[in-house]
Image (cartoon, rainbow, N blue to C red):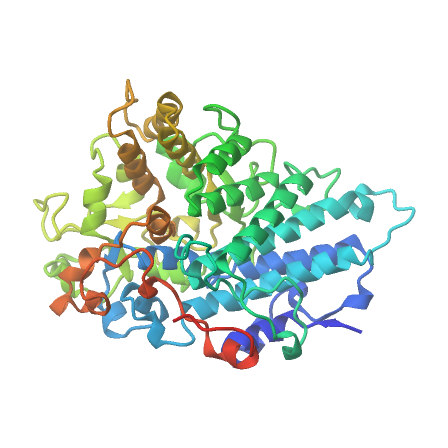
Length: 546
């Protein structure tokens, strides 16, 4: 009898069992399950709920994955000096000293992405064995013949999500070697039950991308377009559908800088031409209706669609764990206004969020500060040494509101607590399609998509494609996607160096010392995590990054 020891194994792979009691308190889907006792569609949905619960952790896709993409880059800077003076897992990512810590931000992410991945693998193996049989079942929601494709598609989507993100964190980027044979993720495509299962080599980056794309093509074929209460169990409502799989597929091709495939997939996702089946939210309500959602909304996995394609849905007492002390809130959320005395020296703040938006971000984004509703509604620019400090002065601080803003009592989504975490929203993919069209010489189509994003933000449409169309699209991408975990991955895709940014403004330039305060090449070891030693100790076939 095979036990699915998902919980304790994935935990002990990376960090031992010191926090065991906390994790055992997870919901039913996280408990030990005897595979031979699985009998119903509901049993498989319990495993899938466990998979989603794992990836939605505050140190997985609802936190660390977002923060790592920003911290490696140049659009944020240290705000709270404790972040520098008492370095931890996330601050070491920003300082590019993450290799000094074995159990770092990547290990936290690996622990819970492996948990989700292992659940997904178990679901696929149970389906392959045809173990679930429901003869005579008349309710389509409980009939394995009606639910098999949906469940397989979900498992493949979750597996692809985990493998892709592990590849981006642990593997040297696409293009590092001509054949992309460099070691990639630590993921396995078979379920892990005991430490005896830990004897497999790391996939190459190419093999990882190939497997991810295969899973996503199957997921696109198998997943429904939306939740239907007459056809699907309620467990499916907050989860990923066909379009979530397509969004992830577009990101995978985007990371490869494969513009032909990006264009094809974004057209399948959004609709052909300049269509968008996930309409952009008006700029005036963007903060409330995209970033302050909580729980299942009328547009969640529904035919009535919004800009949000896929999100980690907050479920009370479960996940995503956007709690008061969650990494994303501690990192980004300005909870109280600073006093004039504190703002007298903005470089010596020892309270408030760990991060603020950088001087470099101010320059790159180059907002129209009178019209752009993203600047006016999504960024707090009120914290300044004095009222006369210019918009681009180091003495005027910028804080994102995307993950919450102001408040220490009666906390809710507006303050960054108990909120959904949007992972895919259509503005990102409209701009992907714009770049793909621009680079393929389809200037009119590229301009239409660029203008769609501009006009929803309150800017005027460009009457004709400018000579620097591609640069304008990429600037719009910075304005849209800052603080959402995309920065370092986009620079790697473009094979552009990472600027030290505001690290050079730190005391004695300490924040950029690891990189010599120079630009860091897109393929630098400073932008790739090490494999945790605990994993290497238990897997004799796994290799370490150099």
